[in-house]
Image (cartoon, rainbow, N blue to C red; front, side, top):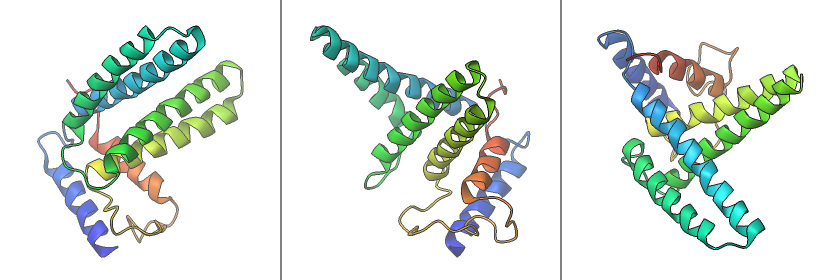
Length: 174
């Protein structure tokens, strides 16, 4: 647990000492959203192939999958065990929860939408926490409330990660 706190402290110092107070991860953030959409495209090609019984949709699925794998390598450079798949599924689940939240909002179910958006952002933050090495998944058996910052008892671990991601990644930076 101490090791994780040191890594987060180091990351925060790096962010604070950078030229404009933010890391330029905006391209990686854009890329992660593109990867989310490619995962969704793979799913749509699968279901369309199954529903229409046209195997050419599976060929398109393979093309989208190869592109997604190549792009994911740009963000996930060093991984162990199942981190690659965990990362892919975190992005996929985040994207789906965003879509569910957007539909709920369109139906006037604002509380449901907010809940889905919060969960989507928590998963997205977990993706970045793992891939920026803020979370050492090998040492984590149960993520405790004090994992990231022992002084802050008001936020969950995912909430704290979300704050770090908000601070570090600014998609509007050109």
